[in-house]
Length: 260
Image (cartoon, rainbow, N blue to C red; front, side, top):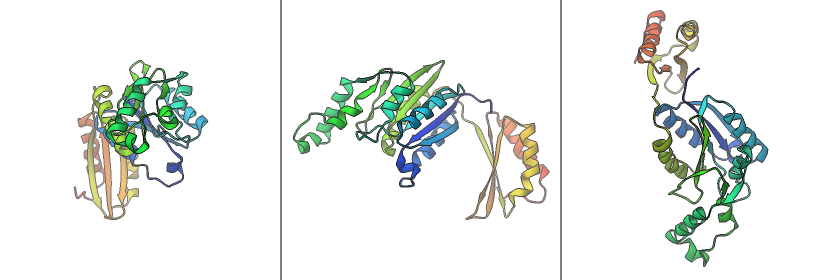
């Protein structure tokens, strides 16, 4: 594709791989990243296995075209939450206890009345686990929960982020990330053609030719089985080039007229 900046997503969780939970986080996050000009190049899903999480992180970090990497899930207080430890291993950093994170957790316990229900404001083992963080991490406050988000400076303008898997916590932390770390991107221009009762195969030759003529434009076909429509979608950084692709499809496929 040859485009910069680009991003990637690593999803962590057995519940995703085993079909217990639908991964709405990646869909939401990819949409937001596309609209701020950091389109997702790659997504990886891994279970709660230390070596697999470490391997996925190292694979993404090793790709210089990925300027923003998001690791989602596995930040919680139970033994199956392994992302903080995996990040430390993958980035060759020590785990250190962050007293400021522990203090924030205690404050939240009072706000949520957890201290009263527990009978103590002392952090338990699960709480302390969430305050053991890689030493090179910058904190991103989680206003909706206890596990903090993290940002790592990978040098040369690249960053890696760790976000909780709970959707409302992930979205809350992302809003801060977007303001602080995602400036300067330019969203792609998107154009669509909608056809009624048109087979995909009729567009094969034209789309193949246009891929060669306009390598900077992403072109795809998306059949909608419920409405029996076919959507052809073109996107790219240059409006004139994207519009030229749409015009070429109209001009070269005469058998069908788009309805929109």
